[in-house]
Length: 118
Image (cartoon, rainbow, N blue to C red; front, side):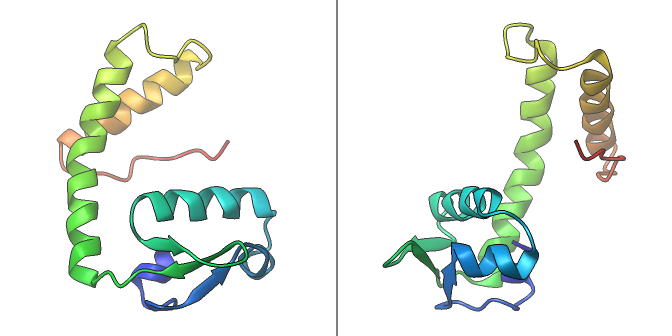
C-alpha cells in the first residue's frame, strides 16, 4: 500500500504475485491476500494470468479513504472490545488491553500506540 500511495507503483502498473513476493522477500500467501484485499477495496483490478492492474485512483481519494478508516476503525475496535460475543475468545487479556489502549490513544488524537508484531 505504501508503494501505491508514494507513487513507486503507478496507476496502470501490472502486478504479479510472484514478482511482488520476490521483491519484498516474503512468501506468496501474504502477497496474494494483500492483492485480493486491495482489489476488493478498488485499488486494483484483476488482470490476466493471476495478475492485477493498479486502478486509476488519485492521491486525494487515497487520503479520503484513509481519513474514513481513521474514523471508523477505532469505533469498530471499541465495539469489539466491549462485546463478549465477538470472537476474541482466543485473544489474551494482554491483547485485549492493547486494543483498548489503542482505542483510547485514537480518541485522544494520538494514533500510533505501540504495536507488537505477532
